[in-house]
Length: 262
Image (cartoon, rainbow, N blue to C red; front, side, top):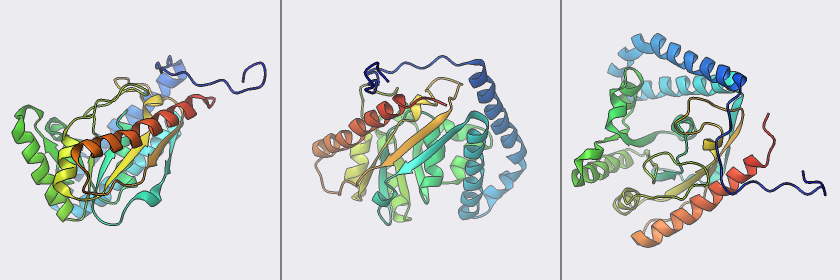
């Protein structure tokens, strides 16, 4: 609070906080427990021979466990706003991407998501094999135009199966409050799939910064915004998507920055 009692405005530009010894130790504890769980789960790879629905149930349990460990070790929880904006049936989810957190949380927030991800991730032992078995959409980013064709072909199959296709429009993680750089792949999917597109705003990068091993206590907010109906032109769609996601993500970031950290 300022001297006159008015709230101090949050800064317009965000810089990662310095990690205290407590933050470092708690982050290492979380990472160690996740690695240990992957080692223990290695024999469970036999589940990949079973129906995908079985693998999906096991994966949801594991991710719920990891999110619980994150809360217990790091003190990092999350809340979801706007669940009522999720349509019934298949849709395209276009989410802001600031950290690895949302790649975990959206797996349990959504019913049966298929993430668009780079092919290299599916080669990671245990976790990557699980991504492959769950039917996520793996893309070779070096394949040029054929990568986009593969993306659309796989996404259409997932939509036909009644699933939610999740794409991060910027293609990589961005820092909170940074200028957006949306890629054309999300517009191509929107045109090809002809389903509602649900924008998702968040502020996860404040607590789990990109390119950092340290995770900070607090509460991440993920907000599901009203869906964009199919049928917009590519230009109108991209403009409406950014206008939905970017201002709201900035508001969530400033809201969190103005809140004292635990």
